[in-house]
Image (cartoon, rainbow over the protein chains, first blue to last red):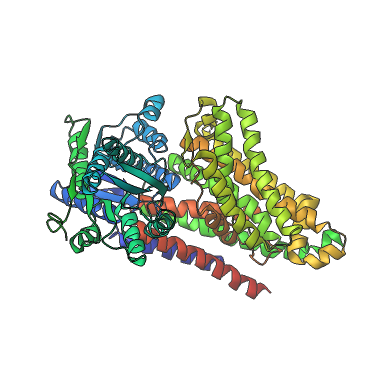
Length: 319
Length: 321
């Protein structure tokens, strides 16, 4: 009777082991193993990042292990993944922090194990890092503040310097979303005629983007534009606008320029989206990790360029 | 009647045997992982796994009491978040660490007793009462912090997670302590006996003079209080209390409990089994990470193990019965 349970558990583990092509678990072949720990593996942004990292790893002949928590906000699972990878003596660790402060204890542990840490996409809270004495080799990401600012300037111009704007925020306390929001608000300060009448979180989610914007439309039927801190939320708002039969009357600006958002911009249901280059971030992360392992100097920071995608340039680079 | 009507002697062997089954499942996994990778069977990794099991194990200890009474507590993850942010705020206001701990446990206990009152006095089904509390406590945590994490604590507080006693992490020592106490309470006290009695046959327990309301409420109080304790450890570990912490932990805690042989129908189960269940989940996640299994495959494997463990448990029960 005990055997039954043992057998099933063993089978489950073997299934897991085989998936990996077996045999490599010991980091064989003497190739260096670089780990990329992402916030999640089920978001277009991170899928692109993984692709970029994998291509770079192939090019540079290093082994790449990619892991992610099931849910983007699960800081404890991300910490567990980092701890487990440290146990396998990975040579370098690239990580997109699920929490800007909550990642710091994991960085400390990597430091202790002498594993260089490359931070990607989301900045680590500088104060928390300096308090713990943790060390980060380099940061690779785009300037989210600047991205928010570009989006704000675009909307202000589009509205002719006057109008009512709604904002869909990400999860509060997330560095990326907070920076986008600050940049956006800063840009609007230059045009006092443009007023933010509602600003609410839709928790990065598409269906919440729909619901929240529908509610905003109820309380502010005269809203003329919406800025969403991610395309998923923006696409939710697009649906809410369509449901209210107001397509074309409300300007929609998102963030990330996912392929779906680019399609929407070409169709005219969305007006613009701020493009980051997640694939480039992934590639740069691996490249810099390899440099660090060779003992080369790397810049403390790489800013991956951002640009605004509008109807004029939506076709290029979309897949 | 009270001592024997619970049926402990009759169930004793099957309990014991089933724990052996679960334990050999855990050991079997360890053997396979030790063969598959040189990184698993090391002192540092085993301590690492134990540390990773702590949060779910502590929550699941309370969940075991609740499930033995035939109930369920869906609010544990949210209560954890709420207790965490309340404690973090008072800590940052300069309150000494022991007082902050009392605040965390008290907040958890309060939420749990409120669950208990809704279930006993309000006669709500446990599923509904704790589902409501799950949303209320989560919302309260978000309101309390305006959605932002509360972070940065003193070294003495953080040592609850980062410190060691004779090389063993303090959090692991706390977990072992919780399980020793829970085991004694469940097997050697009136509260424990009544917990089984209520789950076995509530009507019979009531007729034989058990104050069912009181003990049922107490069981939800225990669950809430242990969520508060888990909040302390999690906050110390991450150096941050997040209002969105602990989402879906209720499901992990329920999984650990049922893998450990506790029946969702109530009346049977042990905390020792739950501890083994929590360790199985932690070893599984650790092993899959170490083997570099892609994250999507990991979810399939974890789900399959939960289903298989309960299937086998039911099959054993049918054979035994």
